[in-house]
Length: 244
Image 1 (cartoon, helix red, strand yellow):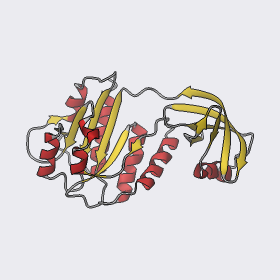
Image 2 (cartoon, helix red, strand yellow; image 1 turned 120 degrees about the vertical axis):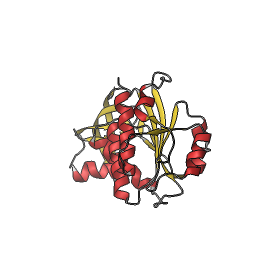
Image 3 (tube, helix red, strand yellow; image 1 turned 90 degrees about the vertical axis):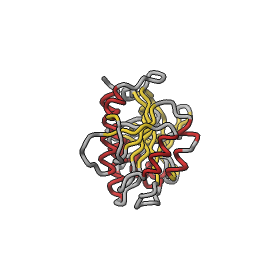
């Protein structure tokens, strides 16, 4: 199934943006009268017919709308430091979409080797992964944030659910799987905000600041993970354990 995306919908009318229109008309060679399928990124799938084209914009007439995909039994906001090698972070974004997350925040820590992250490029990766994996819920990619500011933000303080930070510093930590398994649902969903640091890990001061702001530290065992592997392991733990 070819899946397109647009949230420009008004009643029975919709239109694709210029990039999606180009892919639809120039690459896939669709024409007015053809039927296509698109998602609004909010959990719905639409059947539509291409009604007409103006300039570089494809206009659609919606013929059917339905809820698409199972309702996730969790809400996950994962904050991950961008990797020095951007390809690895983009791989993480792609796989995060395939599993299903709600929010992603690139956080910049003391040891971060990559301190600039272009959100627009990340959004394109996420959009491509959404369509390729036939998902209907588009994760929100937040603007990059300095870790100290993120930890003190209203978004963090108001978060209802478990706030968790993974790090390699010494100290007693609970297994992530145990924490997720025992999470009490909020409004029917297990809710978690998970922090994963950069190459070089979080500094002791950053860990201390996180703990002061309501985070609990966790471990995923003795294995040594790359940033993107640790992030994906955390997502998969939430994904599988929330379904038990």
